[in-house]
Image (cartoon, rainbow, N blue to C red):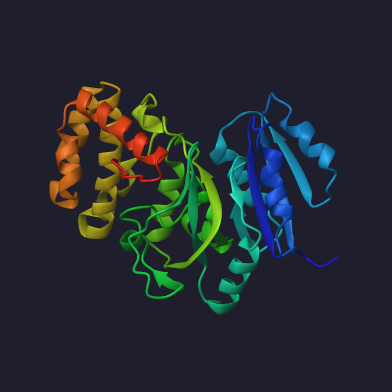
Length: 310
């Protein structure tokens, strides 16, 4: 049997309502040289039973106690038997040309190591295309991570492919971070590697309209800005990108009435790194922010999304 070309890593925790559809989007791929590594992160529902009933020998299930998505993804990377690794969250979906398109990009840009594509966002009302800060001059091109991520991040977990050597060079997912652990890895990758990006829409992400107001919890569980403190002193692009992330976290604090951390984050942000709209929102009363969120969800419902916090 020939060695597969791609390793598809799926972290799984209680996704019984989604996992079969997600796997069917893999089975429908026009490019069939792949292995599927599912890391069951202590699921307590029927997810594993549904996978087992599929009886597909391309699937390998690894079981572990619940340790979080980062540990699950890292385990998948360690178990991958191929040079090219991609991730698929257990409730996301690939279009049938996902692997074929990335294979062609890898052949075309054979000296590059990080590949990404456009995706769509599915809400309970509409599906729309993600917006990027990338000039649409060519269908595929090589971009700088920080330049390309001023709106939507150019890397999204379920819509990118990595040569396995990337993780050997920059490390894997930081398991001490519970929220925005992917952003932490993308920054480390962006500091070293250019990104091959294609405008072909290859995946669908399910949008949670309530995510902006989720409880902040312990800020130590989130992206650790301090690990980049020395680099951002001399890297203006990194500093700007981190300030955009500090802004996003500050808005979470605002929505949860966490004014102590809100003030600390506001002091760290260089306002010149934010567009005017974000500068205003950073100092807008919480009650008004909640009204803006309702207005944003109304725009989403009518297919006219205006991302207040991006």
